[in-house]
Length: 172
Image (cartoon, rainbow, N blue to C red; front, side):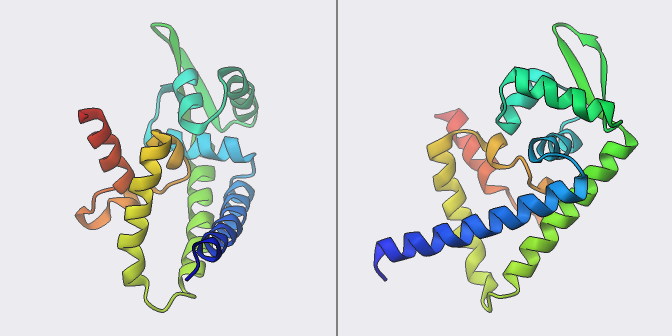
């Protein structure tokens, strides 16, 4: 297969899935895409400060602060007392529910897309390899995984390829 054609096919598939996945996730959470990424990230890493959260979801610190103001006004997050220089951000019960709805909607889109592929077993090692390669280019696993269901990635004693690449990068 011609490489340009393969690249075009991959690009169209990735863009379509991304639009569907992010749209469904944000609609299910009832907030912006960056707000959804913040809710999902805080599910796995409660108590992050705003600067660290901004880094993990790909926002500037001021943009993240404005987004957190909106999430807090909607009762989805709560800022806790300062610990050192950082203010810890945690999800409220409503925030945890919104994050869970978002992850379910994301999963539904992706599982639906996978149903169109007859030999899914061949796809998993290819995607793991692709993610490791992509990680080497971007060097930010947190950003790549900002909408991931982390528990699902490591279920049945599997290793997250992005986390593994991050650890290997830290050793070099």
